Image 1 (tube, rainbow, N blue to C red):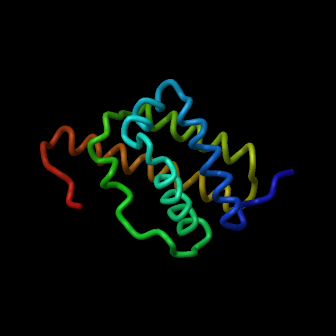
Image 2 (spheres, rainbow, N blue to C red):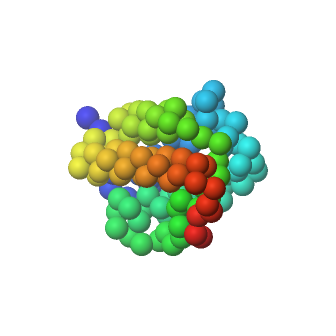
Length: 129
């Protein structure tokens, strides 16, 4: 039986394992590696802070999570794969209330990001940063 997400070490495990999957995934790797390039340590640190803020209510992330994603060449299939890998990683390591919350929040975030990305692609407007 796995434990629930309890602390920053659990967040690091989740984020590191998830992004190791993303970096190898045939659908996602070129997009992520192309944008992030050699700045993976900086990106991972930002993701630790984001999920620490969201799941542990320890406010260490400040910023606008959507802005860096606004013009990515992604569609529904990319978000579905992202969710699949994220949930798979959660299931491999954790179970409990925070793990379930992480799944729910990841789904809502993917849904919102996809909606906004498609809106900006079709409307010709630019997101406010």
